[in-house]
Amino acid sequence: MPQKSVPASPHTVLVIDDDVAIIRMLTQVLAVIGPYQVISALNGTAGLEQCMAGMPDLVLIDMCMPTLDGAQVVRALRGDPRTANLPIIMLSAYNQLAERQRGLYAGVDYYLPKPCDIDVLATALRQVFALDAQQRAHRLRTLAEAPGEV
Image (cartoon, rainbow, N blue to C red; front, side, top):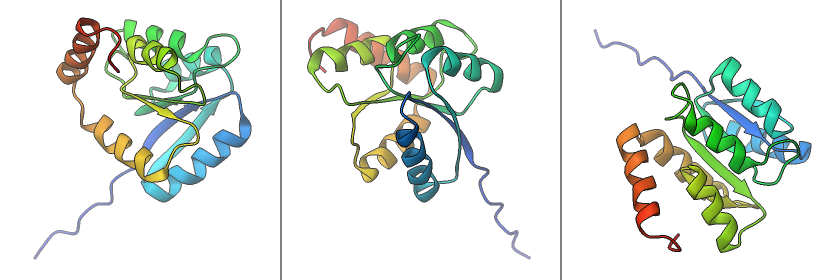
């Protein structure tokens, strides 16, 4: 007798953004594109605390926020062995080359502009969950060896 497939449990996504409307919108989008459970924080400090307390499966983070900005939070997460391999996507209205570089050099896996196309976000989520620690480290080494190219 064939076994029934067990539905995948939802991934927990921590959304760190100082705009409540963005958090609501991302919560709705994530409900549509996959089995995602959303938790949120309204600034970098609260996001970092929530991340350490609850260990989400992925972080979606804004660049410009009060207390700690997105790049500062990402560097803190990448610098801690418990969260060094945590998938991180930055969503930001700041899409200039310097801001993208700042996010990528901090250690995000993807830097996506706001507003973000739903299909692009869904693809980024799939790809980020597929990365392992070696692939993440290789990407960061590549960025360091080719400054200015993003």
